[in-house]
Amino acid sequence: MEIPDEELRSYVDSLVALIAAAQEEDGYLYTTRTIDPVNMAPGAGRERWVDERVSHELYNVGHMYEAAVAHHIATGSDTFLNVALKNAALVEKEFGWGKREIAPGHQEIEIGLIKLYKVTGERRWLDLAQFFLDVRGRGGDYVRHPDNSRFSVYNDSVYLQMHKPVLEQTEAVGHAVRGAYMYTAMADLSEATGDNRYLEASKRIWDDVTSGKIYITGGIGSKEYGEAFGEPFELPNMTAYTETCASVANVFWSHRLYRATGESKYLDVLERTLYNGLISGIGIDGCHFFYPNPLESDGSFERAGWFDCSCCPVNVARFMPSMKQYIYSSSKDQININLFISSEATFELSSGVVGISQQTEYPWGGKVEMKVNPATDDEFFGIGIRIPAWTGEEPIAGELYRYLTQAAGKTIVQVNGKQSDYEKKKGFIVIERKWRKGDVINLQLPMEPRFIVARDEVLADSGRVAIGVGPIVYCLEEADNGKVREMKVDRSTTPEYIFDSEYMGGSGVVLFNALMADGSEKQVKAIPYYSWANRGRGEMIVWIKTK
Image (cartoon, rainbow, N blue to C red; front, side):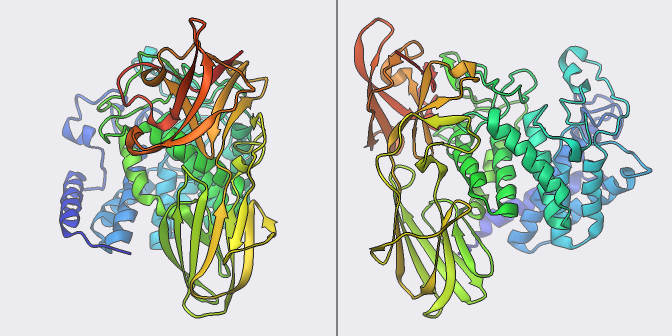
């Protein structure tokens, strides 16, 4: 349901007016150059377009295109969209086959251009996005930034995902955010053109990530230097970079692959990333942030009020209002419930209009109630309900992590109080029937604390366990337990899961006995990983040593 907010509309319109005023006559929009073209910010390039592997000219306007499309859809106004289109026309004039055959060092404009195509129907924007993908890996000179000590990494074609044409790439390499944005755009291009070669390449790279380059939190980009993907199984905890922006990009990427395939494994990664690696980037007060999100701390790591490079806070801010698109999906004859979040939605199916509502305890409890309200009784359609991977033997797809024990509880699905076995397709239980107003589906998921181990090849996690309850990863923090990095737990210990109404406004926590560094044994408390570093500095650990 839309709730107009005239005060917010007025404020946004004032920002759009400022952006329009900053745009140069020919459509160029890069304020650092417009304000002072002589004393440019580091990495901006001495003139337009000459240093695209370091400059963020194209990256910034790509985000602007996305914002302009969102503004147009939300308000119906063309004011911001016209700014974006004027800039895109300039980019099209400068870049393309036979023009500047250069790819941006930081991908993003490709996603924005495809959104411009979708909202305008103008093929030129889709073609330009495809050019920026296809021009990669075709050689060319690399422009070296004067500050070689800081920017030498930008001269590496692998780091920039320019080492091969995108259709030939099979591994996730280089800067994690740049890469994940590009892999997202490849899926978008396939959806828009029907050319599945880009989708298949994106899927291959996603498989490479989930088989050896993703953290249990869903975070990606393990290398502190370069914010980059590491080698397979190179997943250090203390120096894990796992940038918040990379988690946002990982959600985008996994969602696009789900949309293209209907396979729930992509939603499993999306959900894990959302509840752990993404929302960990913002503090409980909404005013302090993480840029990297390590899985271990010696007490020196803390949240910051802002960053000189402010991409992460604003990326979380723009992500949150878009949450609704991830909860459900539909086709002409089926509604899929992808995430278990209390909500209401309406769908137009071939059989008629259908309303769906969810009331859920998730992620602290496993009870989910879904009410089905077709416009007329006896409408025939299907409802698909995702059965998360964490209910089985693996927290997420890829065989990189596994549970030490099976869940004691079972997944139960009931329709109007009657339990039945339903066919499972691509990770969804599908219920096909004639629905009546007020029909109720009840889902019960086994929300239990379980120890997780990594593959032997992940040396950083050797001899250690992590704790998961449903999609949530837990950690130990000094604020609750004293020093935690050297404590040990017996793998046969049975953890206890409770809801703590006092912690962070109400949260699930896990209790278990552990051997402390001084040889004493005591009960310790594990908290959701996303909530750590909200109570001052202190040690934290996700992967706990075992006896």
